[in-house]
Length: 66
Image (tube, rainbow, N blue to C red; front, side):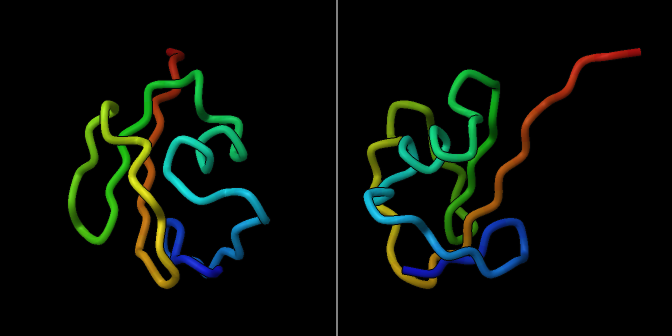
């Protein structure tokens, strides 16, 4: 399955079927992340939402520093 992730085509590995699994795969599951799927912001409670072929996913994570 292929999605658009932050503007680039991204082939999902086998077994990654929802937002929570994608965050884990990208090693972002322990960070504060804003997730948008098809221009809809997804709340953390909804990260079990399935990802479908050709979905457009945008992720922003925060980095501390000064």
